[in-house]
Amino acid sequence: MQHKAKKRFGQNFLHDKRIIGRIVSSINPKEGENIVEIGPGLGAMTLPVLECCKKMTAIELDRSLIENLQKITASIGELILHQGDALKFDLGELSSEHLSPENQKMRLIGNLPYNISTPLLFHFVKWTDRIQDMHFMLQKEVVQRMAACPGTKIYGRLSVMLQYHCHVESLFEIHPGAFNPPPKVDSAIVRLIPHAAPPVQVDDMQLFSEMVTAAFNGRRKTIRNSLKKFLSEDQIQQAGLDPQIRPEQLELAQFAALANAAYILK
Ligand code: SAM
Image: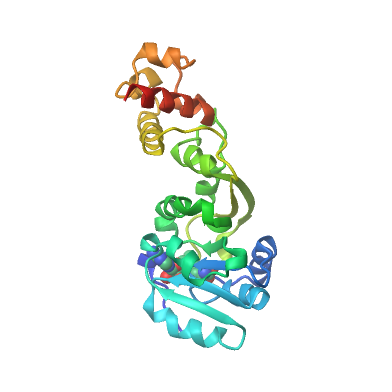
């Protein structure tokens, strides 16, 4: 199909067969699984995945790609295609409507549009109780930030919030030449596996999220300064932490301890 890639939809289509094979092996799709692809595009990943699982769902924003996707997949298996914005998509509804009751959990996959990858990740973690795992292609720097450890320069809000919900594993990198048109950045594949139970107790998710955001908005400030809206210096000390440290030194459990202390005072 002749298609001019649209920048506004973050369209960089995969064409390197060897890379596509490597991604599909990492996903290891099987018949009976509830695979949901975000942004199937010209079908680079859809076709080999559908060959393995025979039935899958996909959400694609670009109307002009829908007819071709239906045509090229028809002889391979059943593709349930939703034209729309994955950012607005209620995955909870999708899982109750379309998925087989014996295997309710979804496996999300996709070469995500890089311009909206962070909002998409925050959207998907709302449904981690219905998700088995996620395999995404993202900008390499984003994957590095997702998997970052405390004490590093790239550790931030994305690391803390995603690691609260999921085990994050960076799998491998992909060079720009694997795409058409080639993006200006390197890419990487990440595997996210939702935790069976939260790794730390958080009493109020909204407050936890607000506190993590405030802490990293003032990245160079001590937590005494960046968190003063939530806790006084004494209260930070009572939660067992040094008010003089900076947010990148805090582990997930310590963010949770601070948010839970603020919750009691609310
Ligand atoms: N999966 C294809 C591949 O690997 O060649 C295409 C990947 S391309 C980087 C991103 C795809 O996501 C495009 O097909 C684009 O139209 C689609 N897309 C962009 N924004 C979207 C959104 N908000 N919801 C669903 N799909 C979107």
